[in-house]
Image 1 (cartoon, rainbow, N blue to C red):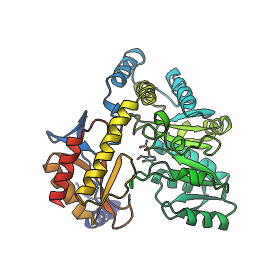
Image 2 (spheres, helix red, strand yellow):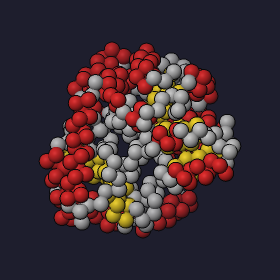
Image 3 (cartoon, rainbow, N blue to C red):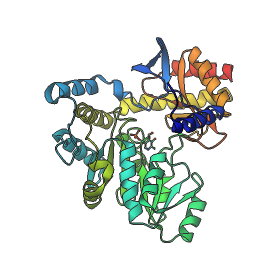
Length: 384
Ligand SMILES: Cc1ncc(COP(=O)(O)O)c(C=O)c1O
């Protein structure tokens, strides 16, 4: 087939991506419990964000199956047309009550939710301040709003303070609860007590893991709705499915329903997914055994990595354990060698992480046991 004129540019761009070691290879997989099947090989999966193993939980699967039998698959329209199933309402209600926020609203993904929240707050604030390492969806939402974005160096409170002094017009500071690539916990109590601007937290990786009964990083920091008036909880991590719940005041949520384009102009989540989320939220609430297992794994990982002399980006007790390799191609090679030995870890390269900080991102879950982790780290030391 001949190339159209424009395609020549695409070929050049693709070549440049490949030459920079940034080519992203899609991997077709099947996941069963702690295993990921790639090309007929079962590997131990250290690449997902299913921290409590709920994507595989029998109760969650049963509720999704029952929902298919009762209601079919698709929601058939936007949530503001006829896609707001009663299961959505019960999920939003239970979430708001659990985290003690006035109201919650379900979006189709964390990306949709952050586009909506950030573009709304950005419209009402000339300047928004965010940690340097916040997720791309937050940056995209702020860009959509037209607000000026000021970023402070990762976790640098002094620099944040200086930025807020210099920009008194800034009304909001945005952080993650646990940072998705470094795996460190944000000092939310300090951020929330600055009193200069309101704190917004994307708790994609903290919800279900940190805080009392898994209420997340805001609760872990001793903060509430008063200190963090907007919290975003993507549901594809510890909740094991997909979607995102935005927790905020009645008024903020109502304004999202009225104006958020990523809410209004998108078909609502499929009902079986919502049914699964209702079940997994209940399991988070009574999931102390799962969290005990997860934290046992995290503590073992930190201790054994230290014994082997491996440098992990953060020693915080979180499921995201990253090891920086630096060079893109070398990181890919190490990932591939680990694959040959039966382990699948993610290889994260720029632009997802800063230049020269390509890394192996190892996610721990309650489905792993300490033997899996020991075997992975032994192999890692061997191939490094
Ligand atoms: C911190 C953070 N926010 C938002 C998202 C986006 O969530 P979703 O995958 O549901 O779009 C992610 C997921 O990659 C994330 O890590």
